[in-house]
Length: 513
Image (cartoon, rainbow, N blue to C red):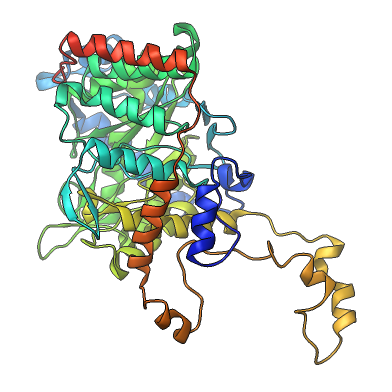
């Protein structure tokens, strides 16, 4: 649902209630960034970062905690030393990375929901992985399956969200069964591209199977059809743990998108200089991406960036900073050097859906989108440095994302759009309110906000003096109430439920291996 026509709260509510049958905005569902990406460094400087990364991987190496991954690296000709320290030959490493595709199309369950990432295409994802949920009504509390479901209802309702993130951890579900219930919730309440957590081979296999059933694919079709994504985080500095290695291997074997994202905070887990932090990010990313290509040449992967800085007074992570934005610009340059899709994020360190949350998020979005990202994770709802998914912040972010979507749409320059006849009709000293040119276009001429209130002070005051956060709370609740689940073949749903019942009876998944 685009939510672009009609004014006021009643108009917005009516649009959301009609979401299931409303015509969608193709440009909002299929983002193509028309702008040349902002570049932080010169070509020579990017080459220096690249060469420094190769030197780190050749001389220092990266510790790999998975025996299986060590064996894969060794069989591919890498030098695997004591304590699993893997060192790379630069030419061999770059030959492996070169095998990865530059563009990936993710198949969705719903029609017109496929997402292409790479080149100038952009897919926008919700926030994910937070342990807490918050809203103005009950404050911050542990995530539940109900709060996950409500966020799915929100995400389904807006065209600028293309991909579903794990939102909140439903802590009312035991960890060995959580992946089953989370995957079922996402696939029944949305028809958009889903996520898979790397939490051990059994959990990954379960999630893949549920997604395969939902899309009606055979085993072979699933292995050759990217239709979900997963994130592997390296343990900065220079370490890949057991579950991340296992996930990289599982995703490559299944032909599903893997996003390799180092979490490099300058001054803490990475050098304090921006260039040094980027060297570390790049080294860790290349090592993990290479593992996927050894397992399956051509496996769909994405270069993940998450370099930011810490508050040097407290040691706390900082997001939406000038350093974060510069790192996002530079990460785009590095990803393009390797001809890989880029992942960036929309993030803030704010503890409340307030002005700080808005301006830090805007800085992060500007760095990511104008830096050329192809996969925007944490696009809506992130709060408290990733510890909370906020209902009101989600709506605030949707407003910003919709404005970016409009920014990316081409501007018409046809003879009619140039308006020469309308200018002649009005002449000097007139106005354009009543011209035919205006009357034919006024309903769709400009972006109509979801959250912003453009009324005068007196009207706003008489209507309750609601600020943006309170208005966002109302829109959140209206949208959740108006949600209608997208159709899912009953036979597929029965098969999903039967599979989950069987896996539950078997004890769920061992998430430690």
